[in-house]
Structure formats: C-alpha cells, structure tokens
Amino acid sequence: MAGKIWGALHRAPSGARTAALIVHPTSNFMGHYLLETLASRGIDAVGLATRYVGNDSTLTMENCVLDVGAAVRHLRERGYDKVVLIGNSGGGGLAAMYQSQAENPTITATPAGDPPDLTRADLPPVDGVLQLMAHPGRAQVLTDWIDPAVVDENDPFKRDEDLDLFSGRFAPPFDRDYLVRYRDAQTARNRRITRWVREQLAELSRQGGKLQDLPFVVHGTTADPRFLDVTVDPSDRQPGTMWGPTQVANMMPASLAHYSSLRSWLSQWSIDDSNCDGNEHISRITVPTLIMYGTADQVCFPSYATGMFDAVQHENKQLTAVEQGLHYLSGQPEKVAFVGDTVAAWLRDHELAC
Image 1 (cartoon, rainbow, N blue to C red):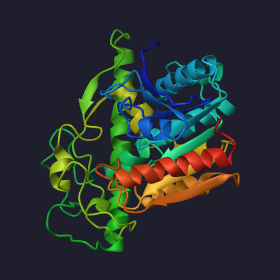
Image 2: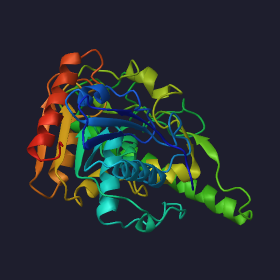
Image 3: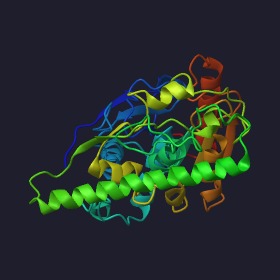
C-alpha cells in the first residue's frame, strides 16, 4: 500500500553528515521545536509527517514503519553518514518498532492479516535511537487511559459507578485496591472491543468481502487515574491533561482514539494484537539509545521512560530527566536548549555527530 509522506529538513549552518529524523505516527513534526535547535548545534534535523498526518482513524503501525524506512533510505541516498531516529511522544513505540524490524525483521503482516510484510521491506537500520517524552506504544497508552466505567459502547452515559473516576465516590489519593480493579477493567474493556472488532471483520468476510473495513466510535479515552492522582507514578506534573480537565477531555471528540476503523484498531489500539509493543522492540535493538523524559509531563509518565530504559538489553544506554519539562516543552525555551545540548553531546560522545 503506497502513501505520501512529507518532511522538513533544517540544515546546520556549516553542513553536517549526521541527520536526526524526528517521528510520530500521526503528528505533523515538520515544525517540531527541535529542528532549529539541533541544526544550530551542528546536526541536520528532519521532521517527518507520515501518510496518516492529522488522521489516525485508519492508521496501521506497519505502514508507519514503511514511511520511516522511506525517509531513512532517502537520507542515506542524500549522503548522510549517520542517521539517528528520535521518537517523540507516540513516536516512541514507532522508533523502537522501526529499528527492531530494520535489524531483525519478524513481522509478516498486520494483525488483520494484511500487507505489508516487513521481512521483505527495505528498512535501513539507523545508527542510534532517542526517545523523547515518549511512550512504548499506542495500544498500551489507550489501555492505560480508556474509561472502564463505560459499560455500553453505544451509550457513554451508562456507567459502572463502582469504577467511575468522575462519580465523586473516589478521590485522590486513590486506594490501591480500587486502582487494581480499575486497571483490570481497562484491560477487559480493550479486549471486549477487540472481540467485537474481530466479529465485525468475520461478518464482512461472510458477506463476500465487498467491504473490507468499517468505522466506529470509542467513548471515554482519557481516564487514566494518573491524570487526577499525581502520587500514582509520581512526578512534578500538575493534575489534569493537555486538553483541559480530565472529565472533559475524556469525552472530547478530538482526544485520543475516539475514531477508528476495524483494521486500524487491531494494529494500533488492541493491547493483545498490536505489533507495536515498544518495550519488546527496544529490547531487540543493538544501537546506542538515549531516553529523555519530562518530570512535569502530563502525558508520558516516568514509568514509560524507565520501562523502556530497563527493557534495553545492552549497556550503551542513557536515561536523562528534563527537570520540570512539559510534554512538548511549550513555553520552556530553556528546556528546549537543554534537550538540544544533551542530544548534541550524546551524539558526539557516541561518534554519531559528523
């Protein structure tokens, strides 16, 4: 399946033979805050927009891997001696998945059984992987965020009060037993949706396959207890979300994963089916790895960074906190400078800056 991708190249004033490629499955990174920052430090930087830019309703992670591969290949063909991959936010799982499949491809189809076969793809390995305010994969994040109080997928107002984060019955700091029940119920809801998705795909097949896919809505996708209780996965963050109060963000049409197709659900959102398990993939890569996280990040919590760091099997790895850093470092020019300085120094230390 072909797709068009876009990229914005910011060049170092004196030229560079190293390119940093900044990726995300669906965000438009052609205006990313690190592009000029890295270029001013002697590193050519490229912000990528995949074929799914601004619309993840039919996104498949395997196609995103192809898009990253096309960008890496283009940079190699332009003569760059070193290419490093920066996964920012949702790009974390994608970056790990890409390098894993570039080094030792194992994925032969999407979870729905569709192309591409990544073992037959041209995926040039990169020379280093950086994770910046990143999480290990969209399926994991959605499962951590999905509202388990929704008991009827067609009616978001039918709710289980014994789980409802917003009913007033439960308040931070949340009881440990409540959190265990809550997390179990989140996983169970993800699996219920997956079963329904597979039933719908089977019905499409029984009808002769004229229709290959269908859209659907997922209600309640921003209800992680960590948004309200900062003692869970403690950090310097403020309660709430990037999209406003948690209860409002939970039902906002524009927030995470509200719209999906059947096949896309299996690829990017299903906790049991998605091939994009960032911790698994990052455990398989062999190149130098830098993981940075913001201590005030309201989206990617410290455990995501430490989990990926611990998953890396080699010793050529570094974990660095950006003190008081927000998710996209908005309004924090000094934090942007710190990240730029840290990345540039790390590249030099690993002989990746040239």
